[in-house]
Image (tube, rainbow, N blue to C red):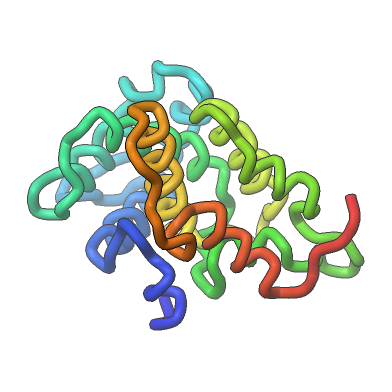
Length: 205
């Protein structure tokens, strides 16, 4: 991942990226090690997809092994309810990605042109609806649709994950009536909007 993209991360770091990359890579293979243990990654991915958008996803091995590796003192992501909830959304969304592509931030990838056409992978209208999501469930559903639209072009999983962690952090703060970050450039909607519109590719629905 380039230094420019790395600087865009708010919550995650290189060690988190490595964990997410290895976990996703493992899900693409029939036999692969993750954290020193052999798994049938494709089987785990199929199980996760079957329970997508269900609370049962937290009972799946594919979720548990990522949570155990990512949420601990060593990685500096605490074992809190909000982080487990965030990871639930990330897993729900990530299992529908076809490729881990870190050449650009996730939001910028959504405004790229579909090959051979004039439309963006995610239109301006649908992107604005994504930013306007009011609940974690709504946010998750819209993200899954966006990831599916990217298809074989893939998505930047680290950028996506960082955005989900930031969105959930802000949602949790609103639920508890905590003050918002006074720096607009550190807020989720501003950061993703800047990435999306920076490509100047957005078109009509």
